[in-house]
Length: 287
Image 1: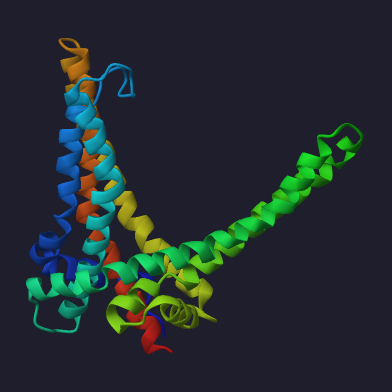
Image 2: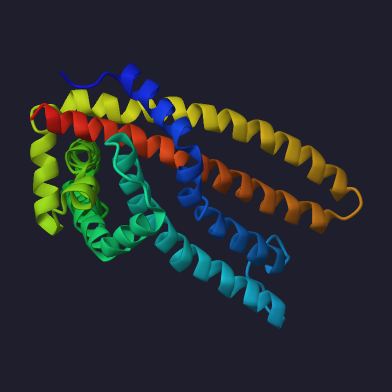
């Protein structure tokens, strides 16, 4: 019998608190992106933080640093943190020795295979979007004078295609959800990881769906509540500053709200991955 949602929540919290220091030693690397973001935002151009003409060297550096952080540093750190955290969770739950240096090395070994699996999985999930193409084409044709009567069928066909794309896309996403775990924990690469994940979920799609979604709803609701409270305090603080220096107040609010989000994401990440790991092992045991 598959692990229940209640057991996932209980065991996830237990393992999270049991290995909090080790988990944070890995997840804290996500704060690197937060620190770079703070620095880049502080240097970012004024004028509502848009790209304006006549930037000075400091502002150009801020724009470039922000782009590099968003497009390069954050994805690299996020992938490595995911890989390393999954390795750590596996060793902790299976009572294996925990050596952070070895875990870090193992996480780098699957870095590029993890990217490749992400690309393959993304293509699979995105493929159903082709279902909206017939409706889109018919809609374009219906705009021509004598064919305007096709607009209603085109709209219906487009909406049906969109609904079908969403349903099939979600179904594929859940079936391929554990591809990364197959790679990291079972060393199954490329299409083999996708096929194995699909077989793992086959005939248990709905039970898997709820066990994937519900723990995240609980975790994210708690994190969202904390985030809204902290942003309320931050907004009050930055508004008071705005009375003296509006630009400073806006910068502090922008930097603070982003930092709060990234810190909470770093704290929440191991908890979410633990829940998914427990479900993955439960599916394997029931296969």
